[in-house]
Amino acid sequence: EAGVVQSPRYKIIEKKQPVAFWCNPISGHNTLYWYRQNLGQGPELLIRYENEEAVDDSQLPKDRFSAERLKGVDSTLKIQPAELGDSAVYLCASSSAEGRSAQYFGPGTRLLVL
Amino acid sequence: QKEVEQNSGPLSVPEGAIASLNCTYSDRVSQSFFWYRQYSGKSPELIMSIYSNGDKEDGRFTAQLNKASQYVSLLIRDSQPSDSATYLCAPYSGYALNFGKGTSLLVTP
Image (cartoon, rainbow over all chains, first blue to last red; front, side, top):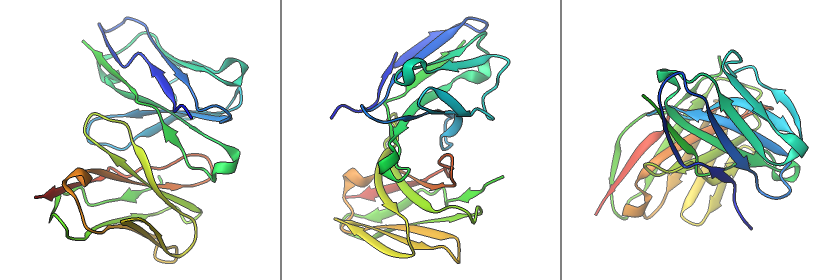
């Protein structure tokens, strides 16, 4: 079974530029999460999707971040414009209703904003 | 604020010894608990889950949960250098995992 797929793996941009990250969850997983992980910290939730509905986006900085999950499968997280403080690893995870909340992470996208 | 506390380490143990990693959490509604292993530059990898009080064993790993004390631990028996990583404790509180900062484990040959 294929795991969570993310792209790109690395991204270097200048501040004020836009950037987008893509995630394809494990097949059959209806719940998808986007986390951000800063160096030396644990991942922090940005947004959670149940199928195509964003059910928890309270931690998403909505002035510059947006996300979508069309058709309840793939998801895209966008930052526009990027700031220096957005440099971090952006992780996508997915879980199934039968998995008792166990979440499986993709490899992440390492973002560096210059 | 839901707090998850872990000793940041590094915890250094010799090869073959038992490594003991501890975690306390503040959110009493947490019902599911997970341990993730994260190698440097990699994403978190799920290694253990525990849902009820007591011990759960899986190979060289044993997770222990005490909900009354809001405490969860991970024991790694016969530690190997390949176990050197950061271990993240993650209670699940009904909507998302709430991660600690992790404990860095170093297993020395």
